Image 1 (cartoon, rainbow, N blue to C red):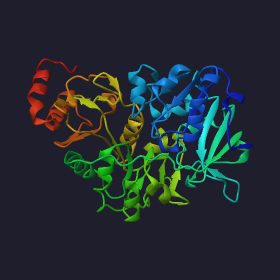
Image 2: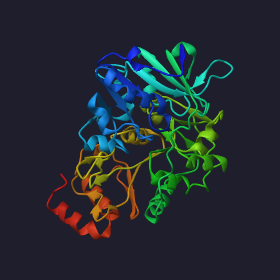
Image 3: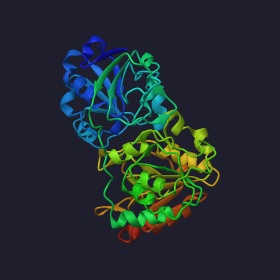
Image 4: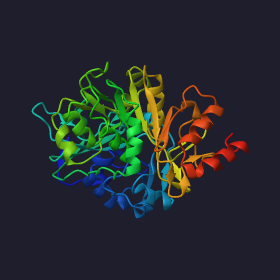
Length: 417
């Protein structure tokens, strides 16, 4: 391992290399900024990027870099709108394989980690996630060793032998504040919370609805967490004793996730906390692990859902703003879990447009074969076991009242084949 205060990427990056780094709060911001500043000297590279939190990457950086991502969230939308973001439309569970084999196999991995402990172990800090799969196969691993990153427990730590270049910094990690909740969000959250029984294990995605659901669960007992991410709202449900993980058959007593997606409050809570472990995507999104987790309640969202249960989680008004993501992975896992509940929760409208539709305006991110329980502020549609005719009735019943007649007419015209 080479220790350095600076890094010249031209020393080890080759033209055509694929570079990947941790996403969201786990982004090694100093390394990414230096990479982008030096891009003209690298001979043309591909960068695989995830959820942005620091908003480091901008369209003008595409003059010497090809950007690929699985998502169009946050500042990635500007890249997509500028035509300089290539989208990989795959399930989240496929990302580790994507980055270790084939045309997008990573040559360089940039990782943010904590300083080493007394045993010489660097924790992965704010995420294990999909990028960590490439650490063992990449040609070069560059670590941003940040003394403001928490030391978190997990399946993997780094030692000096795993790191080719270490750049030491002291910088507050990127933060993701909680999304703003509304009366509509609270109504949806109460309905989703009614589906959570004592002893359930929770998975939840990004956004105001999952956070609001967690805040509706204070009367529950012995809940567990096995999720792609943890947010600030997790802190309170753990501190109140609502989440104990006592009834989990895997990872008993431990909340498991791939990344910390929040603020300093969450980071400090997770620091040296054995009740929280970060695990790689190959574990958090593993179909067998999810199916073997009793009473798994998977809470995800979508841009729109059609009357048969198909979900579009990617495109809104012609813009790529979302992702296939892990929704399908977790919905299928919850469907196969004993007592599990696969939930898609969303507001019934966006402005004056219905989000319960006769025909999707974008791609099918999750098929109707994987449909479970759909929740809006107007009710709960449990599509499990229902034939198409009954699904249509259930979905129209949870649509906004202003749009129900038009949806019924669309069914009569057979527009939702």
